[in-house]
Amino acid sequence: MTAMMLDDSEASDAELIGRARGGDRGAFGKLVERHYGFVYRAAYRWCGRKADAEDIAQDVCVRLGRAIRDYQGNGAFTTWLYAITLNASRDMMRKRARDTAKVDAYGAYASIAGEVPADDPAEALWKTVRLLPDKQRDAVLLVYGEGLNHAAAAEVMAISETTVSWHIHEAKKRLKMLMRSAGEV
Image (tube, rainbow, N blue to C red; front, side, top):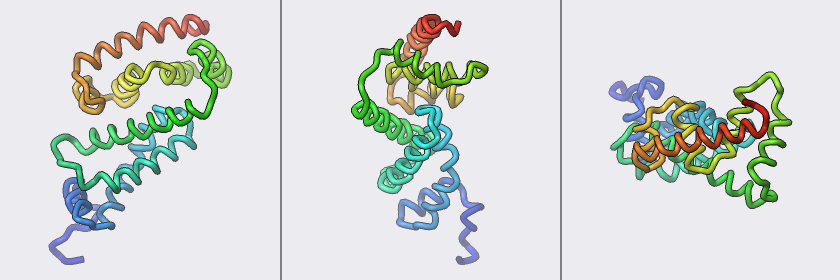
């Protein structure tokens, strides 16, 4: 490495992205290493299972390798990475839905709630969130699970901020109904 180039551990994301877009595998590897935990945590919020979160994180790394050249840098890298993670999570959920029998939301909640320790109401709530329709689930997970504001969640979901707010409002109504029917509220 020349004296002009920074050590990869000191390089900014923007520098690593620029080098990775140019084919620098070391820069790409450092970028993946730096953001792998972020991707894994987001994937875990969406799926709720460690093995699935690991599979999603690996899938995101592969997708990132193909997509890094298309990253324009118009928004935050992590917002773009959220979108890739969200898509990979949705793909896994769709595959799982095809591979398993359909269960209505109340039956699914009852069976999932039975797997959650009675002393962990937070995990019971997140498992119920995962039963929501896609857009409602995504809005809740991004805003409450990942701590994004409505504007950032809107950017990740490629919808308006008002629509994010509407999905969250509808999700709260549905969650209240689901939790009551399961005796959690």
